[in-house]
Length: 237
Length: 297
Image (cartoon, rainbow over all chains, first blue to last red; front, side):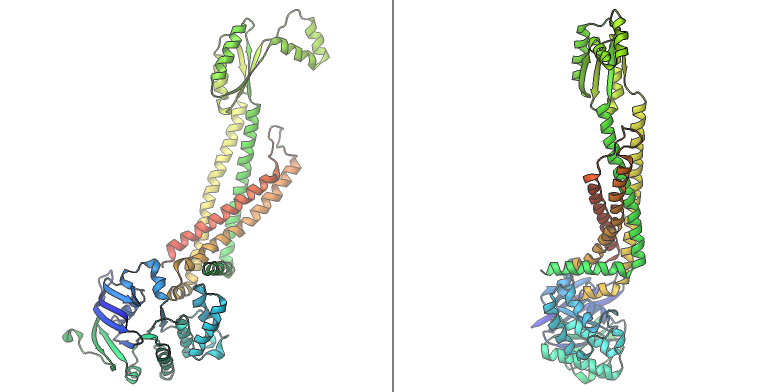
């Protein structure tokens, strides 16, 4: 069953820069997909279009049954509730504890405390931070902070988890830990994962679907792919 | 229930934010306070001026005296004419005999003097009460235009002056207050702008996890509301205690017995309610402006 359906999506910025050109791709429910490519190739724009941080200039993008390309600004929140997003820089609130940071997501949605508590505990446990519930982000290592961010992203049990270079700031060992947490989320709850990364080793080790974006177009899309860089996208077109 | 929880959270966050940016909040609150004190003064002044003007209007009459050779027919003529004029409230005729009887009642000396006279030297009169004090002069002129009227008098000049001054005072204060209300709204707007900037990450995360636009905006709107309400507290206390004190020390009169202050109760409470509402509205307007301008969702 398809969770994401992208048909001929374009993103052309007002200054004329084409970030994404004619991308078409389908992603099934429960899939784990790596999106790789050099810096500035358009992979971040592609991911941002999925959670409607960017609006496609042309084409059709359907995520979880919602037509993102036609979604009005005031209705974007309906899409976001189905998606969890994790960033390279964690984006935690420095004055809130681990528990509060994760609970924040549910509080803003107006859930009652009786529902927030078990959900937060479950999410924090899934990322293995149960012992550090009362710590502030400043008292945690980079890897632990990213785990808090993951817990916050999955606390509302989204269908799709988008990770934009989640291991970009972490050392190789910590990266592996984060990777295995995300892999577990994918396997245990069937959450679809789309992850942008530059980490060659991780991609090769995981043997998942790899979509390579170069110069705003999909250069290759392989099941059980490996990290690769196409020498010249223009020649392969 | 969900909406209630979001509302509850917004109010809690807005209070937190007021104290988190205390120095800026204090500036907004102080500006609101000063503005609302002036609003209070202007409200009290305007209301009392209106009150005094109404009192003056009630008192204001044109007294016209007939010439000695005027006839009964003239009297009926003028009475009928005046009654058709829109600005005339009441026309009361008093004959010279009634006048003399009244004067004789005033004092014994007057009675003795008047008794010496063979004929009544006084004149018949009509007393005209007007509805609108601004038409007083016009009415007096109209009455004067009859040949059989010897004179028509009212507090010429004085009344117009007093009313003119009061009018100028209330118009002036209204302009100053409006300007101050705008300044306050901008200051509050600025405070909220800085709050929005300082909470950028928080707003970003709220958007990412799917908080609805209203849930993101509400805390900021409430913050302006809270600033406005806090800013109105001192002006309200000043109004309640200050006006009652003024009323008690002056005995309700300013300078002369014509300038009567209106009763403090429930007047001060009405003014206080006004101040609270104005404070809240100015605060909300300021924050709404900042949210619209700086909180891009």
